[in-house]
Image (cartoon, rainbow, N blue to C red; front, side, top):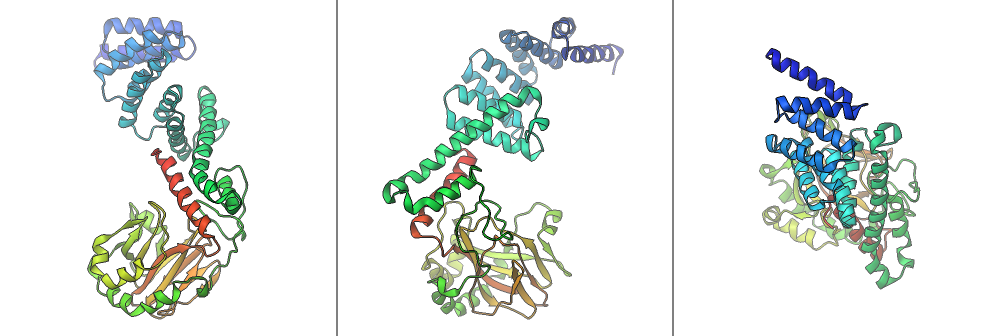
Length: 427
């Protein structure tokens, strides 16, 4: 660094420090710096901030446009330009700059917050709420905007306004998802669904029937809560058990097509889910995952596929069914965890069960027996192990909680899909 550059940087730092308490004095310092280096991005940004504090957004735009021409990939410049354009009512231009900032820094909550403000001023309330929602999630994942002390004073009003709009638009949107069913069936058959939605919206405190239930996503109230269900509660149980031989034969023939059941990014993440004395592995051959049909796997196992397609499967867009051959390697322990919701329960049809393999749900152990269906509520903490030297193979699938009515199932399928749409900004 040359002496001249060093001196310039010192004066730039002094101007930035002055900006905090004396914006008019800081403006004069930045002006002097810009005479020497008119294309200094830092000086242009500083001068623009002075202009915004002085109520001169048009002047700020001039400085920020010059800064953007020098640093087109600078997300902070794009965001500041978007905010200045919003201040003069140039909402389309503001949206374009803030969207550019988001492309450069997709996870920055400030980019999302300010874009939400533009969308709100344009009257696009649903899009604004969805953008605010992502801003809040991004910030709160970093421990920010959780309460007054974690929110900078100059953002508190904006953050509270964002929270309010998210609450109102999410309620309006999700109630709208349910309205066609209310129109068709009346409100009475959907009272429990309404309570479920209120719990999701945090306007009603819903406690699980059993304190050991810990659904991570959505809790449906007023359902009996056994850890294990009676097979007689599932009309498809006999049909599925009758297909044991075909399922087992095809499950034993797909070793080359197995994929990891868990979608994790590192060995450290995997260690939070799997343990064991040997190298742990939990693999799967999916017929469905998150509602997506694996056509090639259906073709490879035609008898299993035909059997499964004849069952009354859970159909929730982008969520269910989830059906696979689940293969647990020797010495593997699936560590204690809980499922997302008691709307669906988990069915296991054991296909290959060596000794010393078991499942424990809410403190109650179950030893699998080949060909005998077991269905359990995975919102209880549960874990499973294979302490034998052979593989354990089961057919794993989700199914509706048997205590839900057909109307409730239809409503919940629509509601869960609607929640996903809102969260992703796809409505």
